[in-house]
View 1 (tube, rainbow, N blue to C red):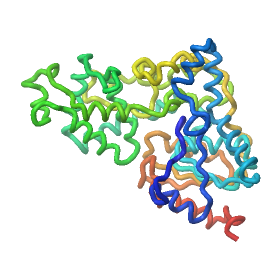
View 2 (cartoon, rainbow, N blue to C red):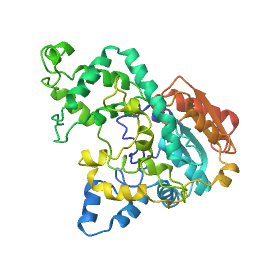
View 3 (cartoon, one colour):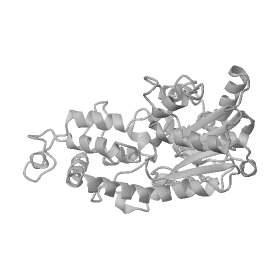
View 4 (cartoon, rainbow, N blue to C red):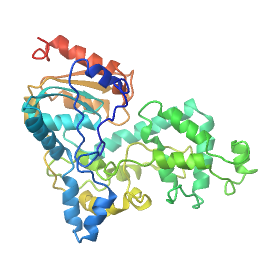
Length: 395
């Protein structure tokens, strides 16, 4: 998340944590408001509002209703009306961990116990702080990628040089830019993303035998062609669910802000010239939203006026209650991935140190998506059971 629907399991074993969880619990997978089958919002929704004369300010007000405070009130309503008011045992992955702390802040009575994986936000929330931590890690991730696939240093540079000619288009008609190509690094915090990006780069050149030499035609890059396979792959890899980018930086907005967010990731990027599209070696960018996305991607264009309005706003719903968290009685067990690209482990541990009845397991064995195997959740569950956190269930 944000803007991510719940998993759609293909079988009981298609997602490792589900395979383990159904041995102990009835598993409920609610969609967050605005995605999946929960009042889905996409570009056509916002376009219709604009066409009907709804003001930009009202569109921004509407988008604010799809953030953590509203999502948790939905989940609490679901619990009270459909599940006989029985408290949840919750598991929050990534943004799900952010939602968990909102649940513990606003409606702790709805939770019997909580688990989080790769998703404890820093409190107080600060978008600029997040990107000041993640951009240097992204530079290191790119370095690790090139260490694994050294041939891709030259190939990525050649691709960027070709794209910069300005006449490369994706299959959906959108112009491919170097900055969009750089966003392939958004997945570098999960496995096997290095391999996926490598093989995509490997397929990029359609000239001759697909080698860099054949692509350059004796030294010039302007005449080379990028393959359809590559262009389809980039289009798919750099597209997302409709609300993911529009809401990306506002998950860090908690109540009345001291200053507007104003495209925090872009602010940080502008201080780091090594991320320029012309810099070499070419660095990939991580999970960060940039203003140009709303110009270049058709699915995002209708959102731009409202998102830009929100970027200059300072009034948001309150999502965390520090006093409530300091006196928390709901057992919270967190998996903190030491090398997490997206959610800084040091900031996670700082937050957990201020939450009563919280416990954490720090590991460097997994990336951000470690929960999709069966070990991580099983380990957290065993730790909670051994402490007696679930004794009302396991009597």
